[in-house]
Structures are given as structure tokens and as C-alpha cells.
Length: 422
Ligand code: PLP
Image (cartoon, rainbow, N blue to C red; front, side, top):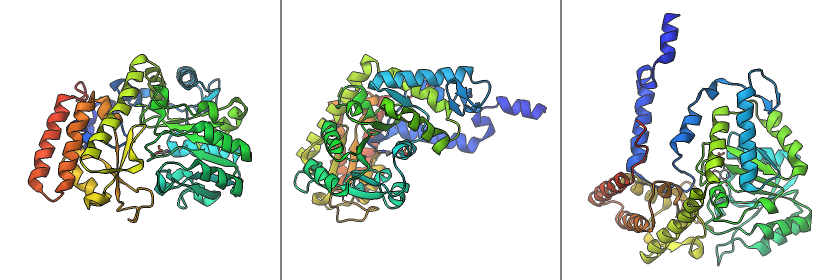
């Protein structure tokens, strides 16, 4: 018993040095590398406090004031606050803040209105869509009749004419707007007009751009969509998690689908951290952050173009820059590896009509949410673009790689991260 009590008070470092050491190594990696993965960000310390709180001890199946467990008076207040803040931030009728992840949020939206065998029209994965938008190996590809729209081969932007034509042809129950690797603005009003014309429901997955929407740097899908799903951990700069917004008529169906439909108890530490995330995203500083994310992506894009990179779609309207590496004679896979060694973290990504396999690819997806959270601006984007070009112009030059790595660590040190975290 004595041992148990003592153990309860011992730090992670004291109790599990192996895991504690690896977490510290990851902190050091985040500090010293330049983070350009478009779906990642650095959350404020306050968000991490919510995630690391005693809320992990609590079960709270059900919804506020209709919980299946006792002792929920504080956690249901937290959930209520998260719901109210999400509704206010995005101007939505209804919010469910319980989904554990973006894929589960999509599952909840689809299950609310679709039956197995129903038709879904969504963006092709290899043109920028997400696995949970109909990939054959995903539940969506197994359960629904998928028709996929892509980008125009010339402009590499969504061909709304083709979306409309496909919608008329396949008469889907649901049309999905939103993407994981699409650098241009999405016209949600246009999607809604197409959905209305064919009697489909519009589900918008704004996971990537949620922070830009909250900060007024991208048009909002909320007025145009019956359902809007999102993660909280990308541009929105919150904890790992997700939420779904919907119009009032679907509120009951959505809530029933999340619980008990696809989940059990909510992850309360994440719910609390989502509430804080929604609060922060409603503050004026977040508007400046969102605008800077977009300006930084434009600056990164402009310098890379100057350096001879071909930019998919010719530019960016959001936080993403998608590079076609073929003119540089390197694959996405090799580029990702070379940059990693040089202290720049990115991910290989298929580009539209990519001749390479998905594990190789001809593209590289870059994003500016994380570097912007560190306080970097256009000037630093120029330095990063130059470093990227240096590495990719001579991927086997170990000396150049080492030099860039130490420059990137210096750049990181000039924009300190989590100084109060040890
Ligand atoms: N939707 C989009 C557009 C995404 O980009 C992602 C993740 O990258 C998801 C959904 C899935 O989110 P999660 O990884 O939390 O399941």
C-alpha cells in the first residue's frame, strides 16, 4: 500500500525513464527542427495542461445533464463551455465536441445521414482528398458507392463544372468538400449549389483550414454546409481531437451517432483543451496569427518559385504549398529524407496525376502553421526556402546537409519554443 501511494506521486522521469527520455528527445527535436508539416502545429502550454490533467480519470458517457455516470458536475460544465464556444466561434447551430479524431468526426457525420450502399461524391485522395473521403481501404470506400472528383489538369484547381456533372450523373446522398493537400481556396457556396441541385447533403471537412476560418483568413463553410467536420490540432492550434458542427435539424441525429453510435466515453482532457482552443481562436491575436500563416505560405511559395520549383496550381491561398519536384529530379520520398537529415521536417505527397507510387510520390507538401506559431515571418520563410533549395539541389552532399542543419537549429533557437517546459 505504501509503495502504491508513493508510486502515485512519482514523476514520469522517476517512474519510466525510457518513455520520459523519449519525450524529452521529441521536445528537443521540435525545438531544433523547422516544422513544415502542413497538418501540424505547436499548441500553447495551456492546451497541454488541459491534456495532461486529472480529467483523464473521469468517465462521462452521454451529454451534459444526460450523463450515464455520477460525479459529472464539473466535466459536463467543461463540455457545455466547449460546445458554446465552438458554436459561437464558427456561428453554428449545433456542435458536438466529443469526436476523438478527424476520421471519427467524418464517420459521425456520414453515419448521421447515410446508409451502407448510399452514394458519396468526394475528392480523390491523389488530388488532395483524405482517406476518410472514400479511399477503398477506408470504411468509406467499403461502405459507400464512391464517385471521386479531382482537379483540372491545366489549372490544378477544383473543376466545379466536373463536380456538378458527376453529381448529376451519380446522384450522391452526400457531397464532401474539403481536402488534406489542396493549396487553393474552396468555394463552399458553389459546392452547396451543386448539392442542392441534386438533392445531396453537403458535408465539409475543414480540418486543414479550421484555424484560417476561425481567424477570418478563409471563407467559412458553416453557412453553406449541413455538416462541418474538423480536427482541432492543425491550423486551429488545439489538442489532438475533433468536432462536428451541423444545422439544427441534424443535431439529434449527430449526437446519437457520436454516442452511442461510434464512440463510448469522451476523452475529457481533450474536451477541456478544445474549450481553451476555441477561446483562444476567438481572440484578436488569433486573427493576426491566421493572416500571418497565409502571408508566410505566400512568401515561402514566392521564394521557392524564384528558386525554380514548380508550384502545383501556381500558388497558394491558404497555409499549404505543394511542390512538384520533377523538375528538380528528385522524388518526394528522397526529398523528405534529405530535408529531415538537414533539420527540416516535411512530408512527401502525391501531386495531381502523379506518375510515382503513393509511397514515393513526385511532390512535397509544405505548410506554415507551426513556424508561424513560433513567431516566424516572411523574412524567415525566405531563409527556409533557400535552405530547402540548397538541400534538394544536392541531396547527397553530407557537408551541405550538416551546414543547413546547424543553420536551421540556429533559426529555431532564435524563436524559442516551450521555454517553460522541461
Ligand atoms: N480530414 C482531413 C481533411 C485531414 O487532413 C485529416 C488528417 O490529416 C483528417 C480528416 C483525419 O484526422 P485524424 O488524423 O485526426 O483522424
